[in-house]
Length: 234
Ligand SMILES: [Zn+2]
Image (tube, rainbow, N blue to C red; front, side):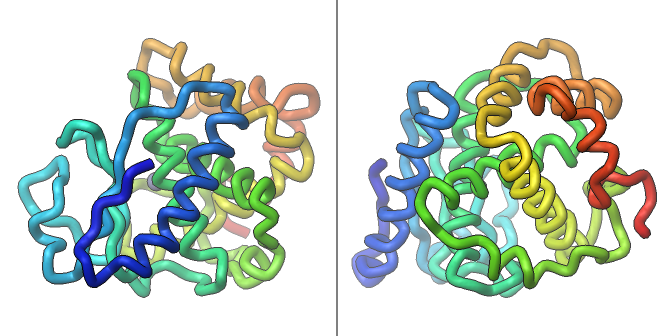
């Protein structure tokens, strides 16, 4: 996967290129699909406002994203990750890169709108699956996540401060890692394909059904038993 960067960022580009190659290969295998034709821009702080994006206004600095506003579509990666990303461990950067890469794989085909928890659960679980394949130990990272931040993934409504957004993403990472432990990585292929096949907007009830079916036998019981998935925070 090509990485474009300012000359002074050559070292960082090499590091990111390693994560991108790992993620690109692993996701292609996990999902059994032809990887999408995409590139990555590693953007220096001073160039952030000029990075390609979907909206007219620049995005907050330090937040990676995927955009189809250029051809080929691109992952836009900041020189430095925003301090919003927590916990800070050796896994933070690769997980963040693989999360965006998983969005890119999913958006390689048309997808309908889904509730936020499912739209973000899928890339979080996929990034944890890549970490497992890459032999990146996640225990330390996961153990630093606040598991009762006062919100649950289903109760979360998109518009929130950066702190709550991070708590939401971290709960989904815990849920994704737990699903991989319990069911193995096969459910990822099922959920990606299920989302590609949906042609109506997915509501909350349908989203649960899709994930339960993808998890397979015992999926429903497991999902409703998970603390992250309750209606209200503990
Ligand atoms: Zn995301």
